[in-house]
Image (cartoon, one colour):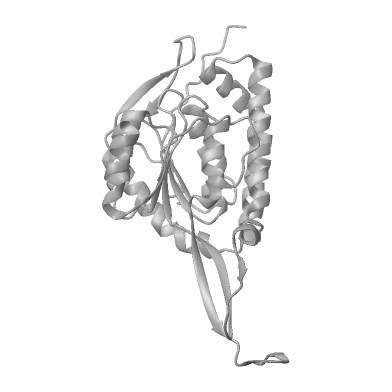
Length: 294
């Protein structure tokens, strides 16, 4: 029997729950750690970035308005889907990062566990960072966290899957929507993750995935007036400085790049970085010797 022809895969962007080609029609070659060609990936344009922001804003109301418990269920379903496609991601991460099969399998397992970890936090983070505040007077005072809005996420360049999930999951777990700029040199795990999200329970527009030149895509996102925050994890020092200046125009929240060991269990910093705090005062009536009266 003759050898079969290789079925070459055409990757596309993920915007608003659909898989469009870049409006520019451009692609670029993706190679493995040894320089061997793997696939062509879309080379996103400024227009693609703007379209992704529109999709993320449209999805924000329903996603942020869902119960925290429901968001946890949705994220756990993503972990189930990732587990089902584990072998595919093991191959893709091995190719992308030049790892052995066993090392790549350990990275993929850690990534799925990381997704489950954040799924479990959706209905707990409010108790950790919110609560009742002591006040002097006939009032009670409650603080509760709320999502910031649309967050642009520059995925780490070297950790194409574990790093990606470590910066994306905390953003959507807390009710934000995301525009993700995949690793420039290793975008395939991110584009495959988009296929998982599309076939899970995550509503279209909650996560939008763009591939291409990080600087070209991130620049319009940093200056976009309808982007509320940006995570600069995948930016180098020079690009991060330029993006931070652009982000100041509409007072975006900015999470600066910092050395991170993505293999370590994360804290809650990446969740709280994209939360606002709403404080409510309510009168309780007069306070007498016998206590409060309502």
